[in-house]
Length: 336
Image (cartoon, rainbow, N blue to C red):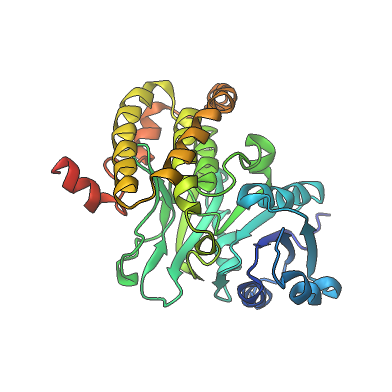
């Protein structure tokens, strides 16, 4: 006789100096119509009142409150949760930003998608900005210019795409099969934050897994609540992580064309940073990325040896053209 595993889903929520948003996020998880879950709340080295304010969860049967002494970044922090899910044999892992909130049927709607296709390992929903009027993401995408981007960011909610297969899901609000991480490995902690979720999506696609976007599953995100507290952080991480992403993941058959387009954009981003008075931050990120080149090559060998899909398939799921969220700037440069 088969039995249903209790608490088959583990929610992983990171808190870094953001206990106010975290309280609201946890409440939205607890309100889910699907009650088959547990919550791992990780304080990621906060130095505000978070430990005191979140201590209320120490005796909560649904919540395990785990404290890290230093900030491990998003990648390192969620890896703590993924290791727990693997060790304790959870079937699914939900990664959710602490400044995100869920509608009540969200979990049930996403879990139902896995029955559509056994190759689906990532499911994401319609992520809206906190006002509910603008789209934050309808899944993640990767362009032929070597730039990851969230689909439809900034577009009105009425323009949201219909449900269907996508390149990947945002780790700010998506569900993953735990078995995916057993197969392809955990998040790359050298990324620290930004693009680590699209990196996972590319690695998953190369290994033969698929991602799906479910329009009816609604969540809301107060974008930039954490990173906005750290001036220059996003820019530094962008210049550091994007080249590493390219070096690791893009197969040789696509690499050189993608690299030429990417470095043209990368150079333009650097010029824009100079104009905006942020050349120092951008340069530090660029230098850091060069230092990560040996790591990227080691990872590349491992990732590319495991590739199971054709180049034709990859071309079909990669966005051909400039990312929609950055297109106006680059169109002025390239006159396209």
